[in-house]
Length: 222
Image (cartoon, rainbow, N blue to C red; front, side, top):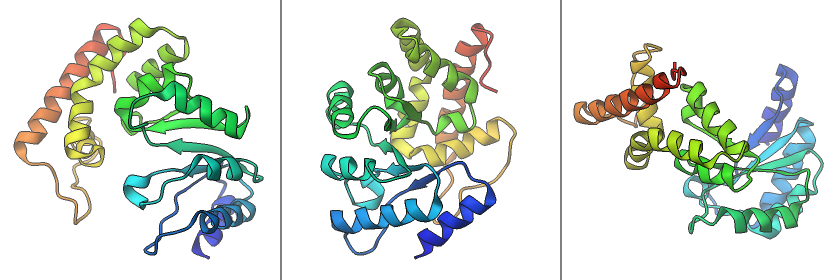
């Protein structure tokens, strides 16, 4: 399959790991996804992270399937969506019980990064860290240290940006942030449309708010 070939190509090109989502026009059964992931993990011979992204793929990894996959050689982590009820601690306990201590569990959805890390997740799969690594790392380190007060302050600084991520999607917002950082001056690829002027102004205001907070702490987000 293409995924198997691409896994081998990634290995040959020097990649450190693989991130795999089950993308298919035809709805997949658990056994089909299991066989697919096992084949790619074997072909790539690299640490592989399961991308559990039902909002995009329309496939949800059950606890049982994650447990089965965690026992396959080279499958070492999972990237989870935010739990619907916000109970990270209970979900993490269930996942750890089903997978074992060596298996790494992280979450995507940037506005859930702080509570996920405070609850003990191994990773925060952050969008914002791609362009603003310093404040994202500061939040992460504070959470890993169990410093809830600092985490709350940093997360509040990100709050306006999180709200825009939820409203417009992080993909569109980050194109505006890239412009604010003078990294590039391009629009998202079609059919995705660039944000309109009013929305861009809101992104700029959210960025300025974040910048002011971290500048006060001698840690600019640039």
